[in-house]
Amino acid sequence: MKQKTLTLKQLYKVGTVKLAEEGIEEFSLDAWYLLEYVTGVSKAMYFAEPERAVSEENADRYIDCIRRRAAHIPLQHITGEQEFMGYPFCVNEHVLIPRQDTEILVEEAIQVMRPKMKVLDMCTGSGCIVLSILKMCREKYYMTDLQGIGADVSEEALKVARENGRRLGVPVTWIQSDLFAKIPEEEKYDVIVSNPPYIETAVIDTLQEEVRLHDPYIALDGKEDGLYFYRRIISEAGKYLKTQGKLMFEIGCDQAEAVEELMKNAGYEQITVKKDLAGLDRVVYGTLQ
Image: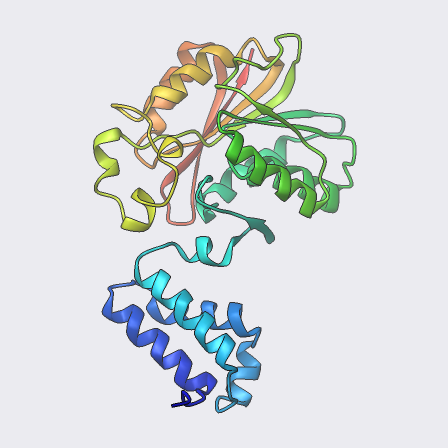
């Protein structure tokens, strides 16, 4: 017997009910995003024609997407994309999904960029930080002569970063490296930015299922106290920064004091802490003397 054709409204209801049953926090919003992703229907079109029939093929695709989201697979892993700084970035299980909190780091970095500067993004992942810095500096401030380098230990992550660079039309040099291991010492940078793994190992098992099961573990694990990578980067970065160069980090909301102390002990001055939109400490940066 042929399956009854479903309308947009009916299909959306199926999605919201299923996601709500499985405890998805933003079940209504996620069900909508997946409907838009599968059918290409905007909200204006939906409200104009909620009774529009959906093809059997698209209905099946939508139900499959809902099934995957109900299993707590991140929405972005289903659609393959996440917006960051207004740009679309492709993502998958090999990279941390770009988050709005990280935009604070990009915004602060843009403020210190000047023509002909060279920026290194350590633990680059999807490349969203360095690519957004270069893209926005080009579009807003006409700085077309900046150089960007993105380094990550994961070759799979760098594949994603390369694709994002291609899609955004931003040239960046990508280097597979365990932190500074393969970064030539003769290279000197004006700015080093980093969103390193900073979650305490013992805390990872308490995170949302979407994060602990689907974000790459190596992008989360900051070892016992969450500060392992800050220590390593701060201890080595001085060899790669120009005098008066900036070292800029995203941090966990309770790590500002510890990271600030590490930077002071390593000779950084003018150390600044910036808060995110929720009023939590999110970025720490300082100047190498």
